[in-house]
Image 1 (cartoon, rainbow, N blue to C red):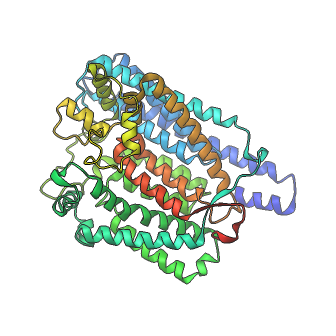
Image 2: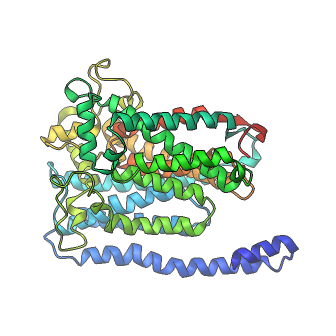
Image 3: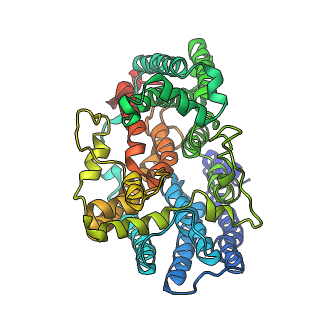
Length: 497
């Protein structure tokens, strides 16, 4: 109803119609705000606190409760914001679930997914630093709001998708996915389990001599999945914003083929859950870039899915013989025995640094940037941070997380971590502001930000969880694909229309 009144006001230029729009939106925001804030900030943490368990009620516990409520409040602010803040919303969704509610449940029940080898003081310090990083992120985002708006500056060329180059990306997507499917043994293997795919990769020799280098397999899988997703998103954006595109038969045929390819290579059976979450976020916000209902539903639904469904979605990680279903008597049990080890691994990283190894002063970040250099060429190339700390702990399974807080601490210490989150908050806020402008009514179909930002928001879950070295491969391939199709111009005639 509010949308209809808004259109009427623009059509008739009747100033009396505008206040009715503002009033209806304000009432809607208040009606949504009260139950949302109570549920996220009060009821859910309160339910966790009522669960029985031998957990300590010490300083670490109260800091974790404060972190949960702070992240929950910020998530509510993102949901209720008039402007769709995709990247910031993803940050606070991860912060609330993975760094807030799940560790709070572990504190109450007294059980953690990964052993914490240090003293209790290291865990308390990890929780404190996590809260510091969240506050620094907020300060950086607030500083970005005082940036002069773009219209006061000299207009800059916008990144657009060139029509001719788009077909090159589509050809690359088809070729890369076809190579990936052939190398891994055909389409059927993508619907079995990730364990079968890993065994196929080992048998094919893509991991290199001795299986120590995974650069070859990472490139095969990266070029098989990333170009297919990007080409699908760009075509989807073109179709939803251009009537001419919906009458373009070659584009429709290419879109249909890309849908089939993505079902094969980017399905939840053969891919990590965080990557499939990236796929879902990207498609959802590319198809509905201006829908407040979709944006709010995605963030609120993300909390429910992360707490109730996400721990059970690794059914396809192993085959039937290696799969062990979650045995739980409480809804909180999966939060203590599965994926949410981020705060514990941050504490282990603090202990690792304090044990005498010290900070790496950027060596880990250098390995992330130059991920494509194989270890046979770069002797002494750093391991990803999760494996590095896991081996030091003596863990047999080193597939461990290394949240961004731990990555920055390991490389640069407390000042570097705080400064990193200040810059991250500033950058995310600026990205969200420009995304809102690039997807406003009347925006060009070829605006690249309308595709890149949703994908970045989804992929931020992987970056925040870490390790960064594992996440760097797909970023590098995505940048190559974007460079292939991007052109910076003020003239839209040669871009998508």
